[in-house]
Length: 186
Image (cartoon, rainbow, N blue to C red; front, side, top):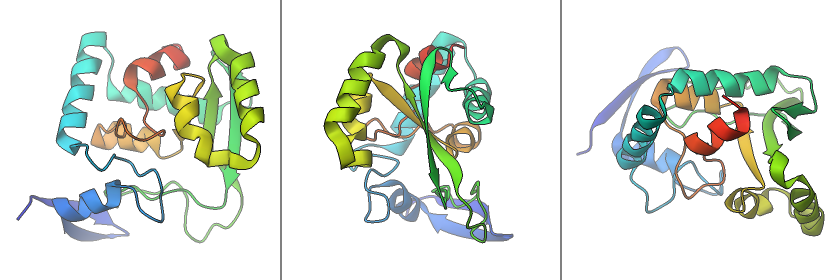
């Protein structure tokens, strides 16, 4: 049996196994990209990101705070990078089931994702996005893999601060620490 994870869950303690946690992290019909690629190891991803932060001299808190600042700005750009705000009715629940930025009873639209377009590749990014038209979310992997932009979720500060998790390398929602530091200008 895997290790047991214990977290606050809507006011009460909830225990779940490593297997259940991984089930929450991997791609599913509810979240097509998932938080972690099917062949990725959670502990290995976290350990590798810890080494990157140590090498660069940055803390999880500093990156989490910078992402929160992006969500707080009303400006069209951040550190010279263009921001595309995406509003939804809901925000994803943390896969550890210990946090959600939005109450399930709040049905108003709110910005829960921000696409930050690389200031060095704005024209290329605009051409790319226009060529993809209605593909929307489906073009995210190519957008990120070509360093045209990064995607920030309102859940990222919590994942980074509390779980030291920047998401897996096989998901377009990954906040690669080195890329994030460059985009955020910290």
